Image 1 (tube, rainbow, N blue to C red):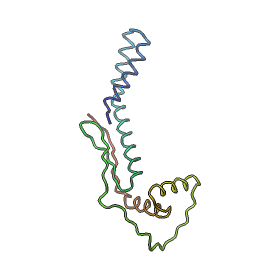
Image 2: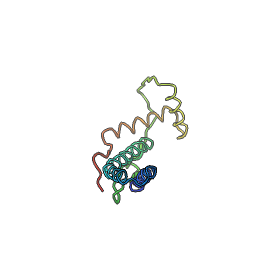
Image 3: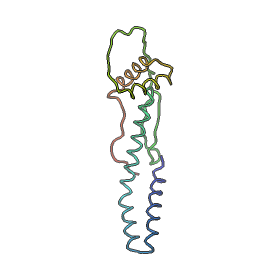
Image 4: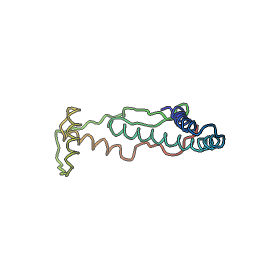
Length: 147
């Protein structure tokens, strides 16, 4: 993720707006001050976006962990396969659970299971097992990034 490029893009947008005001030194000085004041907030918002992306990718990859790591001052997503792939035996299923779902969610589950070549039951069992094993062990980035 290139935070510097994003900041340059915002600065370019502010510069484009400044050109509409002409060469008013007071407006230019105010805009420069505003950009200097906003830069830390922009950096933090982009770091949070990286954190959200890591959470989203991690949710879609049940056998992987996704972390946000600072590399050369930039947040980077690092995807690793977990040491133990989730293996579930569906041969001796004894417990039964009835869950009422919205029709749309049922369709999403059926599509996801189909993509993996699993039955809906197997897919749900694997997904629940992965989430249950991961519960409490997720790595989340919190705090302020300074570069």
